[in-house]
Image (cartoon, rainbow, N blue to C red; front, side):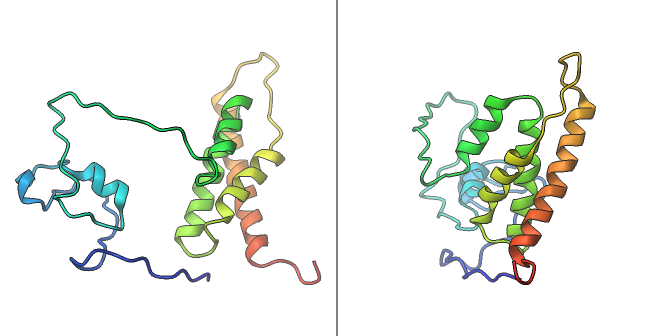
Length: 167
């Protein structure tokens, strides 16, 4: 099991576990409406910014959002995602499945965070797209690619954690 250092949290107590389903906001400004202010809370989890810092979004009014270019150095997984999109076919399914397996391994403590991108890149590199003679992308092909990528990623991560002796 890989141990990670504890993450800092705000002074209002330990971070809450991730929510499953709808929750109610504890902010007095939201008056307990479901969904109010959850966007900033979800994005900041496990760090909980004080309500004064992250005002709830009023979805009944128009808002302007600004998106900056992605910093590929800070977010290395963006390039494999773009490559999967360029390749098309079953590559996006391989990317998604490998990402889900690698993130699960990280969250359960069996893989390092830095292994996520390497596992995805490995799955995309090793993937041999199954081309239908008709040129159509079938649900069967996507499901097969997904299952293959999950097996391949688990195998790759297992080898990273417990390499063979003498290798």
